[in-house]
Every structure is written in C-alpha cells, then in structure tokens.
Length: 299
Image (cartoon, rainbow, N blue to C red; front, side):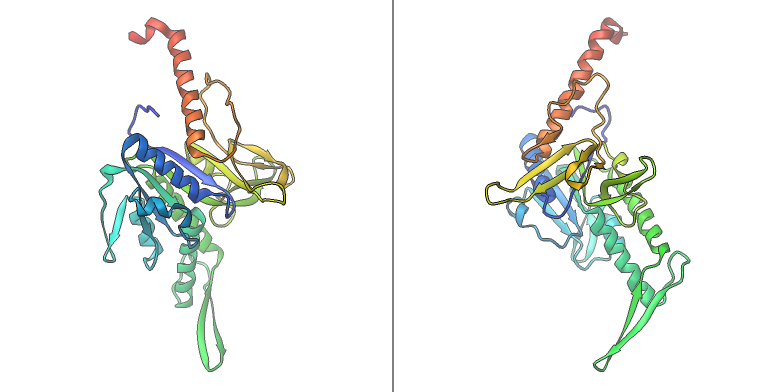
C-alpha cells in the first residue's frame, strides 16, 4: 500500500480459538517475505503452540519472541518497541529487516497482566487502590496464599494494554498485526450485544476496532459428515446469523470513491486477499480524484 507517511498499516484480527488467526499471520508473513524480502517478528503470550506456523519459524521467515518466564509488564513494554530478549535481557532488535510485527494476543497479554496482579495481591501489594483479595488455603499438610483480582486491576490492565497497542503502531514496518479472541458484550452505541475483540473485561471491546486501519473477524464452521471444515474472513461490520443475529464489529476504512468490495466474506480466509481488495479500492479512489481535479493537482 502506498502511504504518504512511514506509519505501518495496522490490522486487528479477532476470532474464536481454532478459527485460524495464527495461520493467517503466517500467510501474511510469507506475503511480506515474497514482496519485500523482509522477515516477520512474532511476539506471543499465547500458550496454544505454533504448529500451524512452525515451517515459517524453521525457515527463518518468522522470528519468535515468546513471553515464557519474562515479567508480562516488562515483556509488553519491550515488545512494542521492537526489542528482542537474549539471555534474559532485552536488547535492540534489527528492525530494518522486519516487514511485519505480530502480537498474540490481546486477551493473552491482558490475562498475563491480571495473573501478575493476582500474585502481587497475594503478597499484600496494593494495586489501583482497591482492597486486596487474598486468603490462605490449607490441606495435606501444606499452606498456600491465594490472590484474586478486584475491579481496580481491570482498569490497570485495560489502561496498560491501551498504551501498548498505540505504542506498537509507531514501529517502522509495512504492517503491524494484533490478534484477539472474540467477546460478546454490550455496546452502548448500538444498544445491544456485539461480537468484538476480547481484551479483559468489557470496556474496550467496542473501542479497539477503531484503533486500527483494518479490523477483521475470522471464524470456523465445523465439519460434518459431508462438509469439510470452513474458514471465513469477514470484511467490515456484519450480522452473524449463527450467533443469533448479533452484530459483529469490523473496520475497512474504504475511501469515498472506492468501488464496492467484490467480497464481504472471504472463503477460504485470507488476509492477503483482504488487503489486496482494500488496496485496490484505495487505488480506484485515487484515480477518481485525480480525474476530477486534473490539472489542478499540478498547482
């Protein structure tokens, strides 16, 4: 995509477990390597494994930086700056050869922050001003101190995630991609339930899609005796009849003069196809404006 700034194209991809988010990240990584010769760096707090993209990691197309035993607050702080972890130290990464940064996922990162705060609460560290939730569990000759989350913890995690999402969008690369699981929450603007990205709690679900250039939802339709498993990518906001007619959030930011999208559902799911369609719409709009203004553009 031709842009007038060095800002990356930012993408949010959300969907339920097994819908193919990681696989689509691998597809985009291959596209970036094929078109720019640059690699992808994947920062992940997910625990689900990397089987679907292991060939890309094995071939060096994707560099993997996993949370592992790192503190989640420190991990996120450094990840959105494009740093890498070596010998349990964060150092500057070679970002000149990175065309795509992937962050997996909003929910996993936020859960890691919440778990950290639970542990701190169990050790009498007060966060956010709320009352600590902690108690002792006893049995089998052992004692264990348990911590829990209060509402203040949600606010702290949501605020930190918001800050880091915006920080990641200042990275110098062609694309920045965040993934997320799906949440079904109330949207005060629509007055009903919506499907949207799951961060932690409900406050950010209707807001996060607007923070990205493009927001897509992916879904999987299970196989039956006569039908193979189907993977879908939805372009923009839509109604999900399979979820009881609930609205699902999306964002394509098509220019006014762009021709209508040829597809609103891409099957099989493909981020590359979605981006190609959107880039084509931008080019169409640019040509329409150039034709109307003509010689005035040379002034």
